[in-house]
Image (cartoon, rainbow, N blue to C red; front, side, top):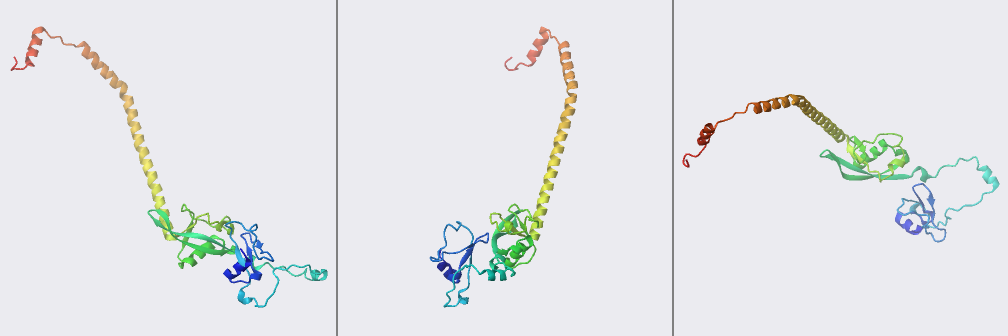
Amino acid sequence: MTAEKLSRIFQVSANTVYLTDDSNVALFPGGVSGVFSTLDLTPKGHYEVHGEDMDLTPAGSTSQRFAFMRTPAAASAGSASQRVTPSPSTATKTFQRSVYLAEVVGGRLIPNRMVVVRFLECEASLQGIVGKVQDAIGNYNPIILTDAQGNAILESEGTTGSQYWKQNARKILAVPEQDFNSLQGTKRKRLSSRKDDDTAGLGEVSDKIEELVMASQNLPAVTAAIKELTDLAVTQRVYLTAPKLQTIKEGFSCVVCR
């Protein structure tokens, strides 16, 4: 990557082109070749291009690029009282992240659109990102930002600052506040229904256990009654004579065969 190519792409002067990474560290091209060293660049890294607009740079300008020189002792002493001002790039460094617009379908959050918002360090807060999303979609109705599981993101120290919001690996959903409240109500009803079902199930099991206990308490009496009937049947056997047996046998025989 050369300074000449970047100047044509971003319409800035090739003599003033430089890059900054996510840590706001400036990277300069080679003084002679104008090529950015690959040793200074990180694969898939995010860099911002800086430089003076071509329209603002005089055609015959031969200014040196980022020249450094030792100043005389008297001059340095005279400038010691001057306040050092931060570079404009530090104050205007921007970040970006993707926010998915979701709707409630079948009791679940389903993303259907996505917006990419850019923000400054001073805007890296929950309310700041909410405002950016509302500006992007042109709708200022209340929205709730949630994680991928539908849990609302709350304003806290952890969610304040670009360190949290610039991580695109963390999926963030934007849900209309009315839909989010409806979803929470549905979840509470489901939990309440499950608790009622569990309570009813426990009640049925308890009733069955009581029936078994009552039945087991009556088992000795039932066993004693069966034993008593068995003993009575043994002691009161009926003995039939041969004529009586013959009469009974004839009573059960076939009339035709007889």
